Length: 507
Image 1: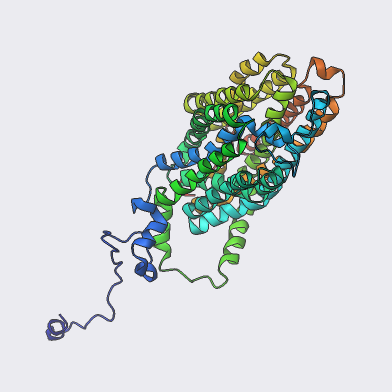
Image 2 (image 1 turned 180 degrees about the vertical axis):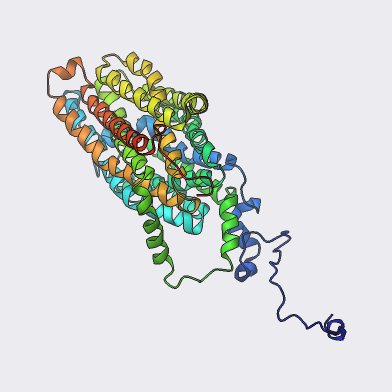
């Protein structure tokens, strides 16, 4: 070839050959593998894409991974109040209730204060750790991809279950749930929502986020009946076997994520484009963190800041409810045991499936994202009021209808947050949103637990046991005021529709 070129008059040999990406191990284009990493071969592709060997183009596998990730807590759900009420350094094996804070029916009245306080302390501590880890998880998922963050998160979530199975002691289970389990939970949530955003156009993200919340429904249908059955079978005779089963279930999402869940297509394309620019930043990771947050700060002064503020206030209500619901139901309605809690989980899961699978797409098409958010907040407000005045357990079931509207808030707000930033900051923005949610998780359980502990000593608690839940209605009302003020300000400045401007698809 060189000889032919030299014989051609007036044509000089090329100075350098064009760069061509070489295929790796039978791949057609070597997508996702940098030139310096080709020697990894099959291992390199496995680390990025698992056994599939190619980037993901749909959220089907992610749906299965998140469902498996929720499953262990659903299996443990019917007996979790009993675990929370157990004393430190008192074995829960072979009988969980043997380690409770009371040893006889005559002293069972202490259960309310002990249970509320223990649950609030756990959830508040988890929120504090989660608030610190959420921005880190968001940045890491933007920098290194969604898959590595989800692998580490699923592994972290299994550690508390291993401690529970090996020690039968809440003194190990609760601290590890806070220190290791909470960052794992937050990391999985941030990375999975960013994963969906990678594969979804902006105008469809809220609906896709709603689809992901149906994972709770699927996990509840699988896990809650299984947990109720196993608690009846082994809870008072062989609880250690029950704990080992929970640990086995907790390992399933880790194995599934490692083997099957591939990096999404958009991230894979960005990695390919970044291969030639590798090493261009002299300060490395620290510069990337500073740059990401520097770019987010001016966006927070616009619609992003409004959505984050509304998210925070809405979660002040939902965090308290989710944290103390199991304790509240078993104390305010003594007839509600593990089987009742299992059925309640299923009812909640069915409501969530209806809300995000049927109600959300319908409202999005009829009212748009902003209208859907307003309807959700209004439904949540009424839901809190009914919840506070419920005197019979059947009213809690009936209130699930209003709960369907309340459940839309998180989905729509996540979609709005991800749409208010450029695509390369989606992970960081969702990390900031989840960090605020975790801050609310620190504050809300402690506030509600204090109110319930004080309220249970009052005569009115016998008539209206859930009256402190009215505070949740106050938080939701404040979020509506913030959203209304921001929308009105936008309308006055722009002279147009009462809505908040978002970025275009190109950012």
